[in-house]
Amino acid sequence: MYNFSCYNPGSFILVGIPGLEKFHIWIGIPFCVIYVVAIVGNCVLLYLIAVEHSLHEPMFFFLSMLATTDLILSTATVPKVLSNLWLGSQEITFSGCLTQMFFLHFSFVVDSAILLAMAFDRYVAICFPLRYTTILTPQVMIKLVVSIAVRSFSIILPDIFLLKRLPFCGTHIIPHTYCEHIGVARLSSADISINIWYGFSVPLMTVISDVIFIAVSYSFILHAVFQLSSQGARQKALSTCGSHVCVILIFYTPAFFSILAHRFGHSVPRNVLILFANLYVAIPPALNPIVYGVKTQQIQDKFNLCCSLNKKQ
Image 1 (cartoon, one colour):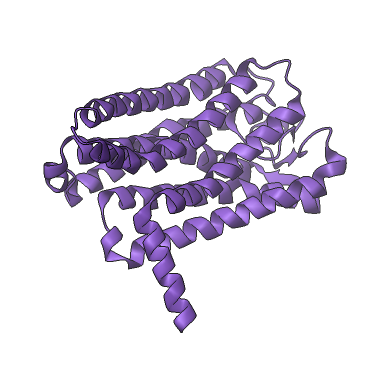
Image 2 (cartoon, one colour):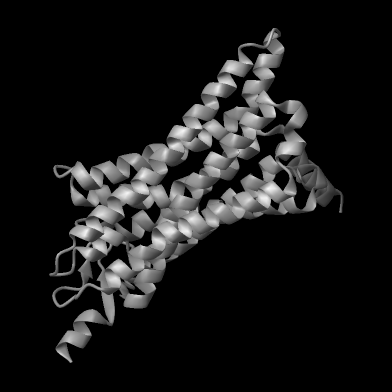
């Protein structure tokens, strides 16, 4: 019975942000505001893309995928964070912890793959404008979506089995606000070297490969843009990539900082790392629709049109 309970722990305790318990209520307020902005912004973006036929293009299809994944990422973590900070709801079941961990890491890998697909879309649009519709056909789009989903699922699913094989006979207290692979694995008294190797190396190498291909795509894009004779044409071509570049920086910069800080930043206070990790899962989903709304003229026009129609009604 003891061994069975070790391999099937009933629940874990998420302690929140250690050392900042007195400020949990106040910390929760900005997270709630950011979460509401993320939900409203991404839902509005999805609505505009769905109802406006002029936005039924590959670029906006990828953007709708990004918005959907951002909704999954923020919803998988932020509501539990808020219940922890405001209501003191620290308990989470083992199955609930595994589910949250899966969607957290799955969304991260999917986001990275979508950004790579969007870079490919911009590469085709700028380097082969006359063949854009013949290259990015609906069949190609479906294949890209399936490959993104299958790749991400195949990368993250082993994390579940790597955790389920571990005994958790000691403490069940997780010094965090949500479940993530290595944080849960460290509670086990068994050897977790495989978890550390796979949980850190494989997803990181996957994301790094995405970053390399994105950089290659933009090197071709810049080469094609600077061969244009007209200054106006160059500015117009680069402006179509501005929002994508902003989203890339918003996504990858804090992600790599958080990963490397958790791995190598032993001198950084734990509460700072946890607070930054929470900001990472909350802020990018809120900023992405704002960036595209501000920098994409087509979305601005459709949003203003919808607002004007609602006012007339």
